[in-house]
Length: 128
Image (cartoon, rainbow, N blue to C red; front, side, top):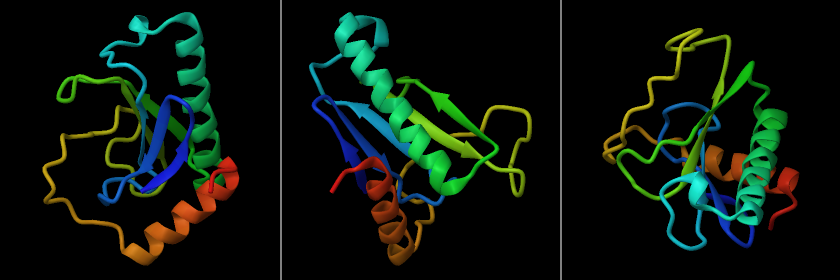
């Protein structure tokens, strides 16, 4: 569910119930696979958007730590996974989150909760 958009990015709160607040920030400018392919201005804009979304997630969910994963191994287009980490129920404390490729069979967040969380995050991000 989209929670933020700028000139070149979309931020999408994930429906898959993998980790509370798990969000993707996706570059939707020209096609690039690596951040270094961006111009200085594009890179600045991209990373500032990533940080803006991460800050809103931190305000809303209050995690202990935010993990930033810019991978592109299975989908070769620039995007960053924002994965909040919590003290309770962390599957791998002190280690990277075990983020696996999604195949659509994952349990989903109840629609009402997803909608409410997305609305709250949009408010924090000034996005309607």
